[in-house]
Every structure is written in structure tokens, then in C-alpha cells.
Length: 351
Ligand code: GLY
Image (cartoon, rainbow, N blue to C red; front, top):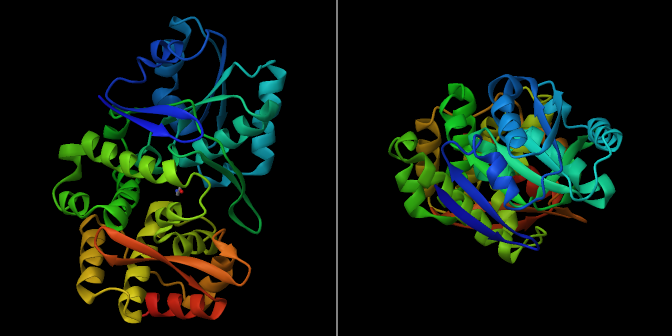
């Protein structure tokens, strides 16, 4: 098992290894008194893993109640966050009781947001069951719901008390869902680690635990210096401005990792055309993303993405911060105007 300690406003461990669901009760008892727990999950994950988690918590003396949402990004609404808050209130949860967010990024973001507003903050354990959630959304404290005007527009920075990443849950992921998470893993290689990028040219599944650990270490180092996303943390959004716009334009029919993959290729292509990096850098990124059978292009037109891209949270007054690679393992942010963003998307999407 690998342990990464995140040194944010709250210090907590991210545990990565097999059979952590079975051990969740004992692990939780090391941090919390045996009070109430609410397991929040979706219907797909519920049938696969909720019983193992709930049994372990009950065996360690916790009272467990469970709330199950349908699977999919569409559940990430303010109404559902309030539904969780009402559920906690009906069950008389106090600040020392614990929310367990069991599932992928959608469940993690929604439950984390609800945990952050109930009684102005209740204990939270993230239990990621997808690769995407394991390497990104479960760590670092970003929680959010989507608004009609855009993705993740209402949220909070709310660090969990513990992250339990049971790698056995990742073995049984459908191929497409696993591949979707590879997109975020590639992102870490591009922005911060040439050696991780090269490692990914081999079969990721041969060294999965160590690779997740490396991604979490990179994220943890970034969050330790910029928890509130004012500077270096924005590098984690490589590919995301275009990616989020694709998700939104497609009404979330394009999954997050696939949209980010297209966004990373487009950003690297635009960066090369603008002279921020060499053609070799763009081609290496393109090849690795293709190797993981992630999409490298979209039928959506550049003009159609400008509007959804403008609702990006990285917008400050008239400027948007875009992340571009300079080398593999080194990325920087560039501030662009609305016209600059429009040019960037056009250069990125057109061959
Ligand atoms: N997912 C990007 C971040 O946590 O900052």
C-alpha cells in the first residue's frame, strides 16, 4: 500500500492499495469516533461496492445510512446537494459524523459539496472507485455542482479527512471508463513529469498502484503551495478549458476524460502553432493520447465552443488563463483575451 500525505489547510492521508474497502471501518476508527456515517453513491457503484464498505463500517461500530443517486454527470445539481443535506439533517448528523463519498468524480464532487455546507462542514472521506477520481477529483478538496450556466460553477474548497483508494475497484472498471481516467494520468505527465509520461508508454496496468501514487504526489505538491487555485494549481487544468466546453456543448454525452483528451491535443497543437512549444512536443502528446485509444479530435466547430469556454472559472475580468506545454513535463499558464481564446480554440481544433 502507498500512503501520500497531503499538506493542505487540513493534513490528511491518501491510501492507495488493494482491499481498502474491506479495511475502511478500522481505518475510519483511527480518525473518528464510532458515530454515524452516510454513504453517498450511485446505482452502478452501489451494486458493486457499497455492501463491502457498509459491512466494514458496521463491523467497526459505525451506524450506516446510505443514499443512492442514478449514475451520471447529470446528478451534479444544487438540488441534489440540498437533497443530501436534508438527508443528513433528517438523520440528525452532527459535525463529528462522517460522509463517505463512494464512487467516481461526480459522486465525489456532489457529496463533497454537500459535506462542506451541512453545518458549515462535516467530516468527509473520499472513496474513489474510478481511475479519474483516484488520481484527480478525490484529492485536493475541490467540490462542486453544475449550474445551467456552466460546469462546476458552484462549489467550495473542502479537503477530505481521508482518501481510501482501493485499487481492486479499478480492476473491474469497464474498459471505456478506465481509459477515460488515463486522460488525467497523461495530463500529470505532460505538466510535471517527463518520467511519468515515458512510463505511460508501457502498459499502465502493470504498475497501476505506483502510477496513481505518482499522480497523487504531484497533485499533493501543487495543492500544498496553491490550495485555492490562484496560481500553479491552474496547471492541473491542462486541456480542461476546451474539455469542459466540449462536455457542456455535448450536454455531457462526451465523458470528462475523453473531452479533456481532445482538449489536451487541441491545446498542444495551438501551443505549437503559436510557438510556445516545438512540433515534437505536440506530436508526442498526440501519439500518447492515441495510444490510449482516447479521442484526438471532435466534429464540434471552434465557433461552437467559444461560448461554453467563456464560462470557464479561470476567467478573470477580460482574461482567461490557458495552460500550454513548453516541454514534456513542463507546462505554463498564458493569459489570453476573448479574441485570444477564440484564436487558440481555432488553431487547436483545425489540423
Ligand atoms: N482538477 C483540478 C484541480 O483539482 O485543481
